[in-house]
Length: 212
Image (cartoon, rainbow, N blue to C red; front, side):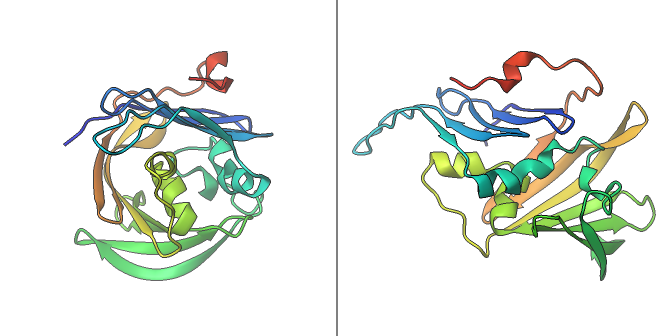
């Protein structure tokens, strides 16, 4: 197994940045989304055997790509897009009931104003989100693996599915945040442990900057 540090920084309606620590000696990879532009930075990759290395690259997102990820600018909690969803232009519909790890849940389908969809399964006892599901580009965005897939030259398939299962929550400033959850994206299984969560603290200007 490989341990990778991941840092996520948000400023309401202005900034989202997900920075993934270097793999096997490479530099950090990051996705940077603001209210006006978006970028993906991929560090240089060393050659190995017959495989040539690649230079570092900074790619600006297209207008459509930026719009598809600006939902991340919402800071209203761990599942921010559910909060005041109608005012934000989103819609919700009941999608049935199911069991997640033997726990009875109610499933809701959230359709963002961009047309992207996310399925949420709520624990009927705690009323906290137990599972999130998405497909295609939304699956890559939701899991944070989109930039990594680009780094290794993999495309995103329309039928690719992602699943996040939340196993523990912690209260931070009166808000429940997931402290432990698993991510399934195709054959990849990842365990995430949130070690530090900070709310309403100043944002260092460095998180807005591009570069290696």
